[in-house]
Amino acid sequence: MSTEDVNQLRPLLWPREWSAEMIPVIPAREFGCVVMAETAPEVAAAAAQAGLRVIPINGGKLDAPEGVTVVNDGVWAKVVRARDDPTSTEAGPTGLPWIDSNGWRIQLARAQSKGKTPWVRFGPPPQEVLRAGAYQIAVADCEANGGRWVVELDAELSRGMAAGNGAARDMWQAIVQAVAFYRDRPPLREAPGAGARMGVLSDFSGENELMSHEFLNLIAREYVPVRILMKPDAPPALEGLRLVVYLDAQPMPAAWTQALSALVNSGGTLVTTRSADPKLGSGMRTVPGLEYQIRTVGQGRIAVSLEDFDDPWRVATDAHVLLGRSHDLVRQANAGSMNITYAAARDRRHARLELVSYSLQRALNPVTLTCHGQFSKAMFRSCATPAAAVPLAIEYGRTAVYLPHFTICGTVDLQA
Image (cartoon, rainbow, N blue to C red; front, side, top):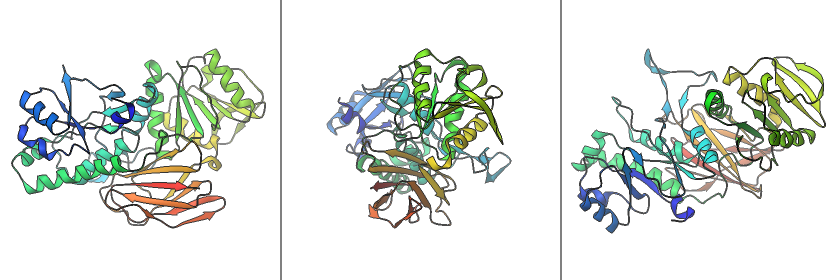
């Protein structure tokens, strides 16, 4: 299959409780394929007749089609409830309700697999009663970051659908609605994070795995898009980046040192840990509240931590401060338990904001987003509403976008 064809597939894990008679409930246009651990001939034949491709699982491993990479350690996307009080939420270091999300996993998988589409595997949490919105959030959390959830129904929902239960069929239709929303939206030919001002360089493995993975997880809660740079690869063009964080404790490869020196000389910033200090620049100074030595190199600077990195949240917030709020691509008001993913088209005249709300309820106050640059038009669509223009205003060279109320997910398309 071509890359474009693969991007249209939305996989469904075939429930064990289903027989071939359930094939008609799966809309081929929305899903395109089913994933089966044990392929029964009559089910496979019915799937093929309905226009569904069968993707096998062999020995627990999904036999992904070309152009797909599989993420097996996905999590059920949700607001995490407090352990001792299920009526309240856990607060992370951000101070906001803590969200379990697959966004950073998907973006890292895209970088590691050279742009393949990640299929993320995770099942419904056991011993939880799930509403239709929870399934829609699971779909949206993956799709908003350029991935696909291998949709997996809990046993009760699977059995209910097989029995023709009306409530179960309604929940299924809500899942189909969310899948259709993302499949049918106009394409933006760029990956999430395109247009980012901050780059993150690491090998993302071994002794560097914990710091690098947690950094990606936490910087998303700062609403800062990042471009993931793979240290084993040759340095790509770094245009558009204003700051790069080198997270690894080991010295930087020579090719990367050269590329980042050029970035810094032209006015950028390199942030690195003490053990990986490239020993460039002069005129050391400190910034109140930041535990870094700042050295001037050409028109830019290098910020070297006074101690080796040990707290991912501190590194993420410090990197945001060093980047500067003037380079924020999106700011928010009243977003609360929401993640915002930013992508810019290559022409810089179009941008897209993917919004996923994890609270399962409508926000008390309308959300306002303030975007870098000046745009003349903003189109908003949600899982429940068609595309429509929304009010915007130019304020201090930025564009404020005023969104209507929505519950689960939405997309804002901006045009200059």
